Amino acid sequence: MAAALITGATGGLGRVLAFEHVRHGGDVILVDCHAAKLQALSAELRRAAPGQQVELVVVDFTAADAAQQVFAAVQAVGWPVDYLINNAGFGGGGAFVTRSAARDPAMVQVNAAVPMALLKLFLPGMVARGHGRILNVAFAAAWFPGPEQATYFTTKAYLAALGNALWYELKPLGIRVTTLLPGPIETGFAQAGQLTQTRLFAPGTGVAPQIVARVGYAGMMRGKRQVIVGMAWWMRWAAQGYP
Image (cartoon, one colour):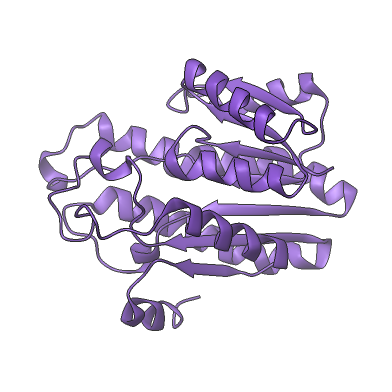
């Protein structure tokens, strides 16, 4: 069965993506910095899908060698990674000029640098095998200006642009790269990033993570370049004009 590596696995969307993959008969490598939550999720998955294998990798993505730690752990497990789901990330609001000088670089590291490094590490194996799927979780509004969330929007725009370019580069090699562009999701993301006071992330405005996971996973399996879900109609229409 296909093995999927899922980062940010214990978060609202990550855990639902893990259940979606095992529901389709796949094995999972779950990556997160919360060891206890990983153990709890692993137990839930084993109960839900007793025939599927689950491996855990505990890594703090703010570490400079985070991607290398993940790669080494997967090499030790000995599984080829068939699907790479870059889901880990965090947000945060506030004026760019007054935000923490440490927080924003950490956001760039977790949201953009580590996903790019993981692609660099795992893509050669996929290319050698002649198949593989990537799902990069970006953000539907990444193509638009994001005042008070400048760094977050920028990291997601980078991930979306990277995914769109790689879709063209890797399609002839048997690799499909899908960029998931969800609107606000009803998870703990907005609370963690202190964004609930904004109109975009106000409580009750988001879509259920189960819907995002189902639509995103299906789009990845179909090899779609972009999947837009949980977004106002005018934003969906406008986003189609971007690469």
